Amino acid sequence: MTAETSARHPKVLIISQGAPGVGKDPNSIMLWRLLKHFPAGSYMVLSSRGNWLDGRVPQAQQEEGYRCFRGSVVRPGISRSNGGTAGMVRSTYATLRTLLDWLGRSGFGRWVKEYILHGIVDPISVVVQTWSAVVTATATIENEDITSILAISDYGPCFMTGWIAHRSTGAPLDLFIFDLWRENNFGWFDELVASLFQQRVLAASRRVFSAGEGVSEYLSTKLGIESVVIRNSVVARGATSVGSRSVLALPMVVLYTGGISWAKLDTILDMIAVVRDMVGIEFHVYSPQSQDQLAVMGVTGNNVVLHQELPADEVRDRQAAADVLYLPMSFGEKGWHVVETAQPAKFAEYMASGVPVLIHAPAYAFVARYARAHDIAIVVDQPGPDELKRVLMALISDRTEAQRKADRAAALASKSYDSLEVSHLLQSYLLRERA
Image 1: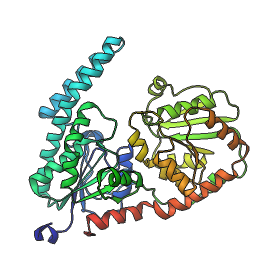
Image 2: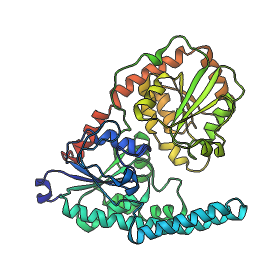
Image 3: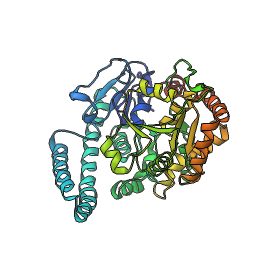
């Protein structure tokens, strides 16, 4: 950092696919919990135009719930630009998607959609989106007295935007690896970009932050990169005794909250197969996906109760009122490095709830290893429904041991996952130049 930069009041340009206070995706939630504690005027966020409802961009204001800003928001951002070349690309993309969705009723149409739409149009769209974001980022750095860049992503355009803007302006670049880049489960073009540029971007960065010990371990052992762990956190709230009921009223409610993707679908279906023929148990799913979308994936059936996504506080109330919280991770072969390293945002929420957590994940998954090391959850590390069913039947009979683990998890969450403390740690590096 130059003498001129160090003399200025720190102001960080944060480049992120998720938007703090608006989106419900894990990246957006993580950002909100961190940035709500940052000083006013200490950051600006460059994100997607589509993240801001009705085109409104909150400026230096603080509101209740997720719509909480103490900095400024810049747009257009990483995607969904509505004008110029980017807008034309997205319009063409949408037209092709409509056509190919119609063709997708046939096997040939599905093949065309997979290899033409995603294989050709997506790369063009990503390049244009990145170019648009770089233009905006560079202008923002030069016009808004930005002192450093923080690129947050498990998706290439954010890292590429931050790296190019760093090279263009000389502003120091920090990276926040929310999830893996090169070893993720992306399309061919994103994998190619990660293979070509990951090492260059890492080498150009001043610091690397990781969203959990699993990612940090991977960076250290596989890439030789030391990182600062900034955990997915939870907002402190008063303790509740709801999750510590000594008497279990039937039906026993097993709860899952969040989106359902390739990284957890197989284990979600395992739970559905178990509860389908059981008495005295229900599997409740709160997901941003529609019931029609979930039904296509097989997320439906007897004793399966689907709910619409709820605001954050209401979700946490539902978690605290459940009997068991379900944390699934895929046993599949694809994307196994993600499973190996990921510490989902909901894991911290589950820990803080005081409710027994049931993890269904491979033994190599970080969440399984972490839970066993700290004795904070029940872990089923065998694929399929058989062992899962045995554990659930035991829980219907007796939750004493499970509740002991839940109490340990709540204590650990209070000690190590409070959003204020985690935010202060990040601020100590970004705003106070901690070594």
